[in-house]
Length: 80
Image: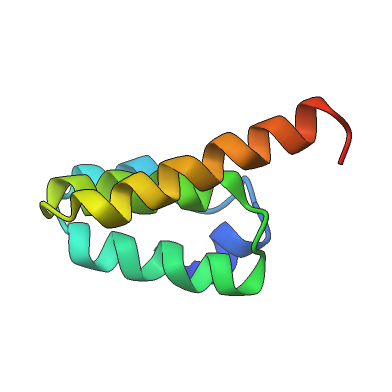
């Protein structure tokens, strides 16, 4: 996966889910982290990283990313 694809939400890029399905959770988490650095409000990158963290047994990190997704959803709902 290309982090720039995630960072710019380019629909022509490989789906984040397809990388996660390849069972390369470490790489998926790193790609998502790079995308988050480029675009800290990119919700799908947090979802992907949270899922990768869960699969790696990193529950604390997964919970933090899930909380960020909740906040981003809330911001969007209230037009922030």
